[in-house]
Amino acid sequence: MRIVGIVQARMGSTRLPGKVLRDLGGRSVLGWVIRAACEAGVLDDLVVATTTLAADDAVVEECRRLGVAWHRGPVDDVLTRFVQALAGRKAEAVMRFTADCPLLDPAVIREAALVFRAVPGLGYLSTSLARTLPRGLDVEIVREDALERADREATGYHRTHVTSYVYAEPGDTRLLGLAYQPAADDLRVTLDTEDDWWLISRVVAELGDRCVPVERLVSWLRARPEVSGLNAHVRQKSLQDA
Image 1 (cartoon, rainbow, N blue to C red):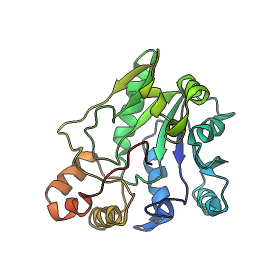
Image 2 (cartoon, rainbow, N blue to C red):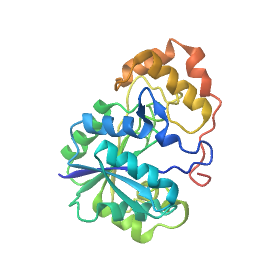
Image 3 (cartoon, one colour):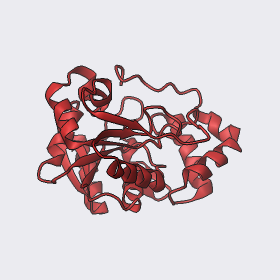
């Protein structure tokens, strides 16, 4: 099965503008995401899906520097942007990444792809259907035909969140959730606010410029409540609000 990775990235952010190109330990946040996706060794292709806004010229320049393909599409209709990015790539399934998750674990990415390929007829797999990982480490894969159905049928906020229609209105699509123990869903390592930035910066300062296994990251944060508490108060926006 041919799996294409798509990283959605743009400079616009209501809470932390320009976050995807912030320098984190010597490389951009986007660069961290792309490195993790590539280190997993399971993707047949990888493309960054950004917007047509002038501000996202900087994202395209970073893609050029990193040697990764890009596509420019609608600003708010991210679902259409994904479908457009797939044109000509012969994808059977799409692994979705967001460019504000720099601490992704390649092993989790690899496991998700291996399971998806091993289960016949599977249409959607995610680690967040029943969340056990820290927010910011989740992985999801959707079959190309399920994504196309969503593009035909979805309206409203489902067009911003790409896969939400697939699992909210699955129809005949088979869904599968991956769970990890011990659960660490109370931890937050996604980048959406300045307090998220301080936590992630502390992690990188201590653990270095490398992809950290989820077990190591969770144990490190558990041993340092003064760090894990830096963004514990941050409320994740709902799908309707984001």
